[in-house]
Length: 404
Ligand SMILES: Cc1cc2nc3c(=O)[nH]c(=O)nc-3n(C[C@H](O)[C@H](O)[C@H](O)COP(=O)(O)OP(=O)(O)OC[C@H]3O[C@@H](n4cnc5c(N)ncnc54)[C@H](O)[C@@H]3O)c2cc1C
Picture 1 (cartoon, protein in one colour):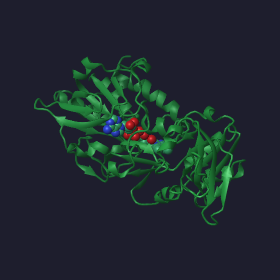
Picture 2 (cartoon, rainbow, N blue to C red):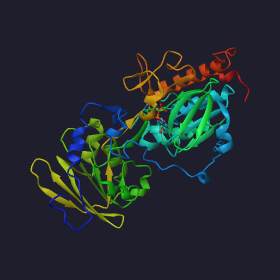
Picture 3 (cartoon, rainbow, N blue to C red):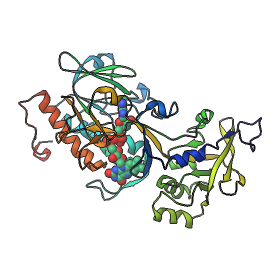
Picture 4 (spheres, helix red, strand yellow):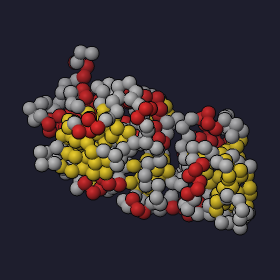
């Protein structure tokens, strides 16, 4: 507890936040898009809860939505032609393509929603480099991916994390999740950077109760922040983007960063500096005073002068990056290279019948882009088809040659 924190309050000494942001410059960190992500091989290395997804599993009554079939015990026993691990852009496109090749398809994702990194990390940001869309908002892009990905009616299992993959004597695979077992003839691993979660303030588990109420790691809906007194912590693009996006909505915004050097694009920083946002460099969070599920104030300190300031804040947005790991995928006997799954030009992994695509794969020249993930997904799906039925053509012809 910091000296500035009255012992009787619910305040949290968050001095460690300095080491948090400092750690963001260490090895093992990666930029995913413009998000700062720590890739870790060791699930135990991250504090509990941080190596897991941050999303709650959805309840079956929330789904199915049109085109989705929620699994039930009967369907769990059925052997699918192709099971896709990961419902991000790559997994959704693989589901579309495998469906077009008339395979029975299942998607499993540990998150409670489809869309992978785009839905979870930057739904409000514009994407400029997806072919066919000069500019499209993340969430609008995912609406299209979901519509396309589910058009052949795959089974979708959300809130289920795949923990085990075993080849069976009959040549099929048994996938074990934290809830069920799934059987499949082929697998496409489209697990992105693995299960990922935002960096949190260390040793502050009681702040978890505020998450989604007045403490946020993602900005999903700008309206949540209307008339709020907001503190944004971080110096990357997310911090800048949310500051600019929320400036007309929040009552006021303070943005603090531990250094005077920014990870964000210069242009974004300049926009924020010219705005009404109160920007304070060399500042870090010292203490979050809270009670009854609400933030009462936040004390920050100048890491040069040690001067402390208590701010009248009711909402905190932490943009300190993310922790991601492949987790159990590492133990499935796949060849792992540079933190990802090694594939050949057919997207085959080292286990026959198991293919991979998207951010999770590694090959010479690999780029972690949505566009490359789409191409890899199409290749993987076509080779899955040929794996199941070696008499089938790998190249199916053009979709435009099909009738509607
Ligand atoms: C802030 C930001 C901005 C970006 N901007 C762009 C951009 O402008 N253009 C661009 O091309 N790319 C951009 N990217 C990168 C792009 O989002 C990724 O390349 C893309 O999301 C990769 O898609 P994917 O489906 O391979 O993986 P992901 O989107 O990561 O999806 C993987 C899914 O697999 C699930 N999963 C993982 N492990 C398991 C498991 N064991 N069991 C069940 N489910 C599991 C995860 O929960 C996740 O939903 C950006 C990324 C970020 C973070």
